Length: 253
Ligand code: NAP
Image 1: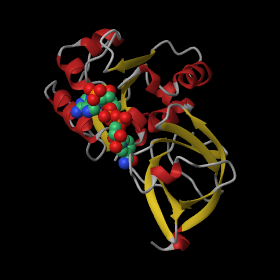
Image 2: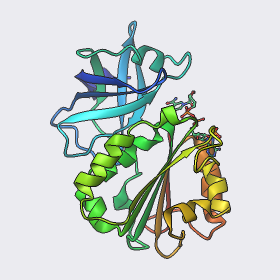
Image 3: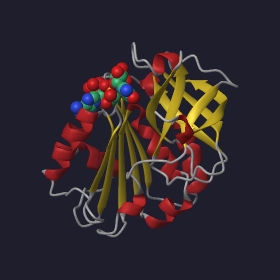
Image 4: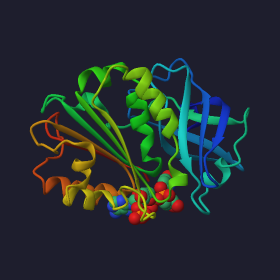
């Protein structure tokens, strides 16, 4: 890994949600431009080695700092070190962003209803997209669906409400739908593919998935992405290629 590809940045804040979930912000160099939905490659010095991982960006392209949302992977070379992050620590940031999970990839169908389906830390790119007035002006309906195991893992809920008030002021078509899969008392507790197959997700938001109008983005657990993609295809939706089609995906790890 060539160190010249990276700039050295400083950690500005760390927020811990649970024992295994945390967010952090760091300085953003002027050269680092990105589109909402893209990811950055962040490096951490572990001994003499630079260990690098991809992280979707939570903050908006207009923010002066960069924010990321992370899970602690048990025995993971990167996150087990990253979890001890403190304000003032140095991190390496690759100078260019990556990824194609962006709203600009959609040409047809024209924007109408946007379904943002996340598990766990896969929420990150969607928080970034919602901090852009363009997203709110383009779509009549926006559904943010966030699946976690337990309610304590529902990070960012207050921020999402604040973002909807600030960026989506006057917009009447936004719904935030939490799914808590390991709590049978939760309003929605089945996995996403089941909720699509049995119509419960559409019922929860009050709108039908429609190949002629829906843009559906998936981010998170790779098996969720795979299984949900199949459930959507069974409903007639297609993968977005060269601008056309409904479904766009990002595996998170
Ligand atoms: P997770 O297992 O991804 O679960 C998060 C949500 O996704 C839960 O609601 C879960 O439902 C659901 N889910 C899991 N598989 C699904 C599927 N096939 N279809 C639909 N929904 C599905 O939990 P996590 O806490 O976010 O991550 C768990 C582990 O993943 C971590 O401990 C870590 O090892 C790894 N991970 C690694 C990275 C990385 O960067 N290397 C990043 C994130 C996570 P259920 O409760 O029914 O399982």
